[in-house]
Amino acid sequence: MNNSYSKSFSEYKNENRGRIISLLLLFSLSMYLFYNMGIPGLAIVCMLPLVPIAIYLTLRYKLFAFGVLFVLNYVIMGIGRYVNIPLPITAISQPMVFLLLFSELININEKNGKYLANTMYFMFSIWIGYLVLEILNNTCDLPFDFGSWFLNTYLLGLQIIFGFMVVSLVINNPQRLFFFLKIWAVMSIIATIWAFRQKTFGFDNGENGWLMGGGRTTHIIGGTIRYFSFFSDAANFGCHMAAAAIAFFIVGATSKIKRHKLFFFFTGACCTYSMFTSGTRTAIFCFLAGTCLYIILSKSIKLGAIVTILVASFTFFLAFTTIGQSNSMIRRMRSAFDKDDASSNVRDINKQALKKYMQDAPWGLGISVDPKAIPSNNKYKIVTQTASDSTYVYLWEYTGIIGEYLFALVNIVTLFGGCYIVLFRIKNKSLQGIGAAFCCSFAAINVGGYANNILTQYPNIIVLFGSMALTYSLPLFEGDYNKFEEALIAEQEEKKRIKLEKKRASRL
Image (cartoon, rainbow, N blue to C red; front, side, top):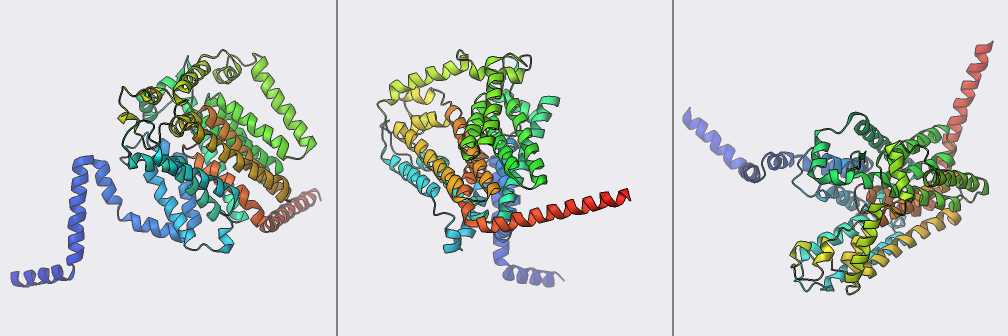
C-alpha cells in the first residue's frame, strides 16, 4: 500500500511539476510579504489570482470597467482613511487605465482614431515634451534622479493625457455620453450624502484619525469645520463640487427630456450644498467663473440676462450684506470677498518670498529633484519649505515660470478650442448645452487650481479633463445624438399621451 501511495505521488509530482513549483514560489512570496508588510502584504498575494479575472473583465466589458474606474477614482482617497494601502495610490487605479487604453489602441483605426486628433491632445503633447526637456534642468546642481523625474512626469503630464485618452476612446456615442453624465451625477450625490453625514452625525474613526494626523489644522478653523466627504481634502471637494454644480445646472437647463431636467437640476443643487459645506472660499470663484463663461456660450440674450441677474444677486449677497452671518458656512464663504483676510494675505506673502528666489530659476528647481535631497546650504532649499498653495505655484517652483505659463497656455488653448466647438460646430441645442457644461466645469476647476493644489488630484483628471476631451468628440456623433434624442422625446410624448388618456377616462 505504501509503495502504491509513493508511486501515485511520484507520478503526480512528475505530471504537475510546474504547478507545484509555482505554488511553492507563491507561498514563499506570501510569507516574505507577510513578514515585511504584515496582513496587507499577505492580502496582495491572496488577490493575485483575481488579476487575470480582472484583466479579462476589463477587456471584455469595457464600459463596465470604465464605470469601475470612474467610481474608484472618486472614492480611492477616502478608502485610504480606513485601509492601509501599501502601494502608491496611482498604482491602484492606473493599471485599469492602461488596460482600457491598450484594448482601445490595439483596435485603433480611422473611425475611432479621429477621437484623438484634436487640439487638446496636441497641446498636452507639447506639455509632455516640456517635461521631457526638464531632464536637462540642473538648477540645484544635484545628480539626475530618474525615479523622481519619471514619477513627476507621470503625475503632472502622462496621467492627464492617458486619462482623457481613455475617456475619448470609450465614451464614443450618445448612450455612453449619458452613462458618463449619470455616473458622475450619482457619485456627486453620494459625495453630498457623505458630507451631510459628516455634518449631521460627525466624523467616524477613520476621518478623525486623518484629522488628528494633520488634517485638523486646515479643516477646523476658528470653530468652523470644513467638510471633505471622501475626497482628498475640503479644497478639492469644494472646487470639484463647484465645477460639477455648474455643469449639471447647464445640462438640466438645456435638456429636452423632463426626467433628465429634474435629475440634473437636483444633482446641481446637491453639488451646490456640498460646495458650501466644504468651506472652500475658492469654490465661489470657481462657480462664478463657470457661470460667466456660460453667459457667453449660451448665445441667448434672455438666458444670459437671467444668469447674469442670478450671479450678480448671489455675489451681492455674499460681498455686500451680512444676511446669514450666523451660519458658519456662509460666514466662511463670505470671507472670500474680504481683502484683509489673514490666510489670503499669507498666500500673497509666500508668493512674494518665492519670487525673489525663482527669478534665478526660470526652468524651476527641476522635476527630477527630490526636495529632501537638497542640502540645507543650497539657496533653493527654502523654496521646498515654502507651502505651494496651488497647482500653479507648485509648477512655478519645480518647472519654473516657463513651465507655469506653458501649462496655463495649454489649458487656455484647450478651453478655447472646446468653446469654439460649442459656439460654431454643434447645431443641436441640448448637445451644445452638454458641451458648454464641460467647458464651464473645466474653466471652474482651473480657477480652483490657481488657488489650491487640486488639478492633478483624484477624481479631477478622469472627470473634468476627461469631460473636456469629450467636448471635442461631440461633433463626431452629433448625427447619432439627434436620433437618440428624438427617440427619447417620442417616448416622453407617448407616456404623456397615455397619462392624458387615463386622466380623461377617469372622468367618464
